[in-house]
Image (tube, rainbow, N blue to C red; front, side):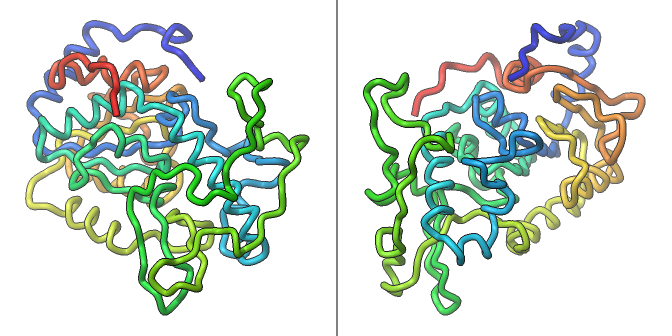
Length: 305
């Protein structure tokens, strides 16, 4: 995880100019990516580290993988749920939630599924989860519409409990390590739908090959095409090179938004390429976001559930 000590501190002139624009802004859009989760110590399962027990994480996150081995896929997602629950929303999550309470025209679009923005008490009507949430579950049956939001039960069923080992630093085995034995879980031990009584439940995330939730896209599109211009776009912890994220950046800029990128890497290409009058704050989002929002939100308290 990157830290601000690896990068140059924010200059007073940059912070002053950004704060002045932030305070005068009414309609603000934030786009959040995996770099924000990394600031809370969560693995992103992207790039070179995109494997879980020698399984390609992208391949596990698919309808085909679930159909072939629902036990393995649920163990992967139960592990991710467990790690996300153990993590804590970092000061950036708290600052963005506070900004939403101060600025009613602020909308956040998160590409993260870890539930940390929700736990930071980000107002739900100002938060759109583009890829769903690890803590939403829904029925796999085509003829059943059962869904459940914000299920933080860990484990969700007893069979998915992570094996305990007092000799380990955390008191449990690291089942992401392929050398740790993983039991074969049968479908009868997995979560089943309480409504239809026979279909399996699945994580409420968008898997590869699936469409993004239409209702989410419709709400974001309606906000983007509101009657007033967009004053400010915050791009936090993401390169935003993939659509629809890149498209939202392009649309916000076309509606007049100035851009502030908070990331460890400079956006030298793509939709978030910076122009004169924009800002780039390089470093750990968990540290930088509360600093640049402080003129509106004040200092962030310690997180409590």
